[in-house]
Image 1 (cartoon, rainbow, N blue to C red):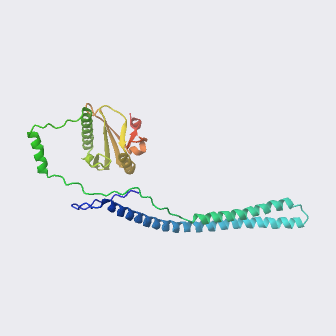
Image 2: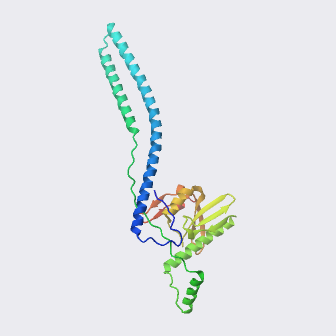
Image 3: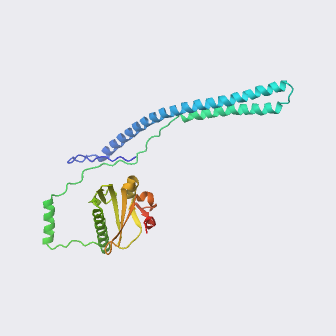
Length: 286
């Protein structure tokens, strides 16, 4: 279980003894975890009691019928032996079966009694994080003043590495192609890529809302999704779309896949938080 907690109120001073705060928070979390487990245990015990009562009635009724039938056979075999028939082998066999039925009934009722026991283990606390407010951002005017001052002093901006610059251009071209396509289809797309929601575009239309993750290539290649993107695809299902833009910088070609978590097979990469999807073109129409 992961709890997402709120940060301290804006402007709150940092506690002086941070380790003490974390120790106190850890103990509160443990107490809360124990309380939740005890409530769950009580609920599970009540459900188990109901189930056990039903099983016990069924077992006792079933074995009562089987034992009664075996006893009636024995009574009949003894009567026939008294009448002169050789029933010794049949009597020994049925007596053994009756003993096995009684032992089996006892064993299954004991097993059923054990099923009623529900134990809880001490919850294991993995970690506690103290969330503190981030430093306030400088006023917009101050940021502009710094920018203009740097420009006036002739300090050049640090250029991006060539591969990073190309990657950004490809991503931007892919977003433009996807946004244009949505508008052409009569939907109203909104770029939410900066919010890290697990998708890049929310597009509203008459048939519903699409949550679109855009993957763009300078040419083409394998799809790589972050774990968060793949989890959102699993959660949103048919509302989640993959828009793949090949040759984004030259002749953009847009391909769409609805519900990729159901239609594609993801391959987690060990040590890296991403999902590689092979053979994505196989699910597309020719």
